[in-house]
Image (tube, rainbow, N blue to C red; front, side, top):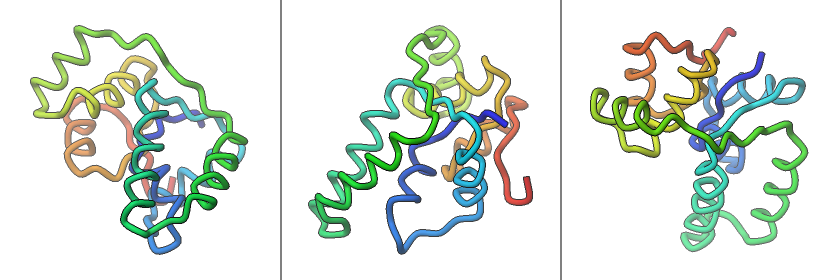
Amino acid sequence: MTFVLDASVSACWAFADEDHPVADVAFSSIQTEEAVVPALWWFEIRNILIVNERRGRIHGRDTDLFLRALAQFRIRIDREPEQADVLRMARAQGLSVYDAAYLELAYREKLPLATLDRRMVEAARVMGVQLVEKGG
């Protein structure tokens, strides 16, 4: 099943010391299915990796390997969010505009959202957006 992939989930895949059931389900799904991301995901995932390089948590060559591996998956970048809906969701749910972009995408495309962010999970439930969860 196609799903919206949050940077928190994809970042979890990059670090050997991180493990989460939702990230595992999403990783299994992306092996054969498409993930959809807002355009900001491209920047977010790279920023997470660079910050963690600076902290000594990941080496630059591992960042490069991870990004090459990530490029092998079917990840569709959505570049046309509904601006008014993103702002409305950010305001109503107390989210950053960045997080609201993921929620708006899942809501608009009627797709489940894969996220590890507690506030996004709560907002998705309020909005009636399905979540990628352990056990399917």
